[in-house]
Length: 414
RNA sequence: GCGGGCGUAGCUCAAUUUGGUUAGAGCACCUGGUUGUGGUCCAGGAGGUUGCGGGUUCAAGUCCCGUCGCUCGCCCCA
Image 1 (cartoon, rainbow, N blue to C red):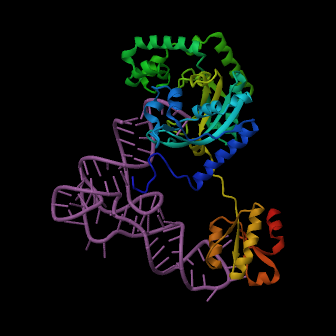
Image 2 (cartoon, chains in turn purple, yellow; image 1 turned 180 degrees about the horizontal axis):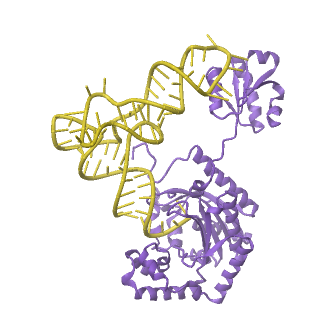
Image 3 (tube, chains in turn cyan, red; image 1 turned 60 degrees about the horizontal axis):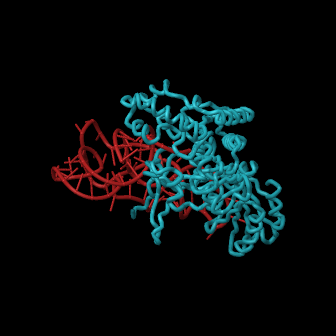
């Protein structure tokens, strides 16, 4: 505990990692705003009940993955393992229903007590999008469009495929579940240990088992599409049509299910092969039963979340630090005279650096290693003439620029 | 929670087949050569309890046990 190392499954994000990370967030914010979503920021912890009630007492997240603790007054709190429950809670406690359909986006840290792996951390970060109050497939489609645009704008869409499925409404889902349990109960002896537990706890999860023995049984297993009632079929058909109209490539993946209890109708995951077994880069679905389950009015909702770390890992290039201007004053007077000049450059939005020590050689050295583009030399000679010597660090060319024209000089693209 | 692989300087790696003196190198960093001109070059410096703890041995970076961490996979998920 006293060791100078980060807690298992957490990490410091710095340098190139930090730039990739924030690039993902910036791109997302821009798109989300363009799509008409509004930002919401919810606390990173909630009363434990918020997650317990919504995720289901027996889900893995609740039984073994939550960071829960009692605070000083004895309240049981939990660091959020996912976004939806907290946002739904905010929607209710803030009376957001008055705004009608709400389209919300968010980004921030999540916490799950899991064994770390490539692309999986105990503190990880998600982008999130939710539409609350819309029962129409158009909302699902809009969210999928938003997700796809994000992946496109990040330049990673060609490594990713959309897997789309319908879990049906609660009636369809219940019927299917019964059929599934019947089928697998007949073959219980052939199931893997994991799937035998699933059979009783969460039978639909057997469908995406990686065990070869289980997979052999799947061929003859009942298919969800045969159990959808008309309403569910129409809904799914509309979503597929919309996705096709937007030219989003997808596959209907009947084995795609959800671990969380409150999902219905649409379920989807954007999956890549590039990240090993942590291939789901963005996933979500419709949760029409959630808000009622939490004690609110019956209210439909759809949403998704994406792992920022996973997206960042897939970026082809690391965004560069913008190239800077480095001020190099020589002598005490120049040092003072440089202060307002640097301030004005910075106020104009020009990335401007100034060292605290060193002779000109060292400063130029540091400037070029730090990827600066220009050095502004300011010494006695320059001050006497009210100019600065601007040195192009790539070409070595030097020009004289009047001090009161410095900002304009760099703003004009130099 | 379960299984495999791996832990030597900030990073990448050395350290003779089978244990043997003071654990080395490159990159990066700092200082000087050059008190107003960088990236090169030269010289020097700093940086390590070989992850940690125990054991075997005259002797352990090297062998054994434990532990912690990283990593890949399972479970589950973003």
